Length: 363
Image (cartoon, rainbow, N blue to C red; front, side, top):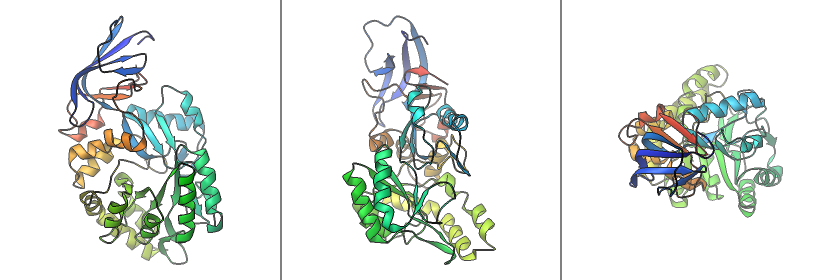
């Protein structure tokens, strides 16, 4: 499509879950919900159109060993794009991916800076590894480096204990979260276990990643405080393999991980039923492949979340939560077109017909 061309998207345009239109137009890379006065060279795309998918827990520039070079990071971003993910919340990375912002052919990224973990309590080469006395300073640093988010590691295996345990004293996270909020950033935390959650929520955390340790005691607290979760069920599916690998050395941890895996769907459904905001995230970029947002939506449906709400968790609701536009007048034209109605069957999301990024058909 040339720079002066107009894109006409017609069929069924899902501007919102209940706002369905017959068409939209793209002029100069921006959305118009009205036919432009002069159309000139027009390219037409037909099908069911949605805002570009959101992966709210994804790591561009990271693999299982740490930071990767630009060539690998580019392939990761392109894999997500071609699968329909056009907005990423990068939930922690040691890589500087600001160069992506200059590429109109790559997904937009909202960064949380680099993970902040307790010393020797996280994956090697991923995080700043510090002690509680330095937490406020490091949170302030990452709040300034990121795009409105900071990522803590809330719990991890304690090798002396042989099981998951919380990483930070409550007073340390309370001061750190207050500092992030003062600087205009929201805070999220990696949490698998049960005992890390209450202190983080009562300290003012905005979101929890994975949240496999939610229980009947903490679910009402999350709901009351409006704390969101990003369950990353496609990642939780790896727990049995991880448990098998660590069973000989850490049998208590291994058994705990299996229990968390076994009740994962019940946990997510209970959270949703209580009114906790749930969003789609895959945890791609560590040991997990990119391009799995559609699979995560399907996992939420398997957990018992209604299909339309699971779809919203990757589109309209997720974009609103992250402060980015959907299919609105004048917004950047980031959208995905499908052969069939994804509201009727979310598995449709796994096969985009067309991907449009910044008004250009890129896939």
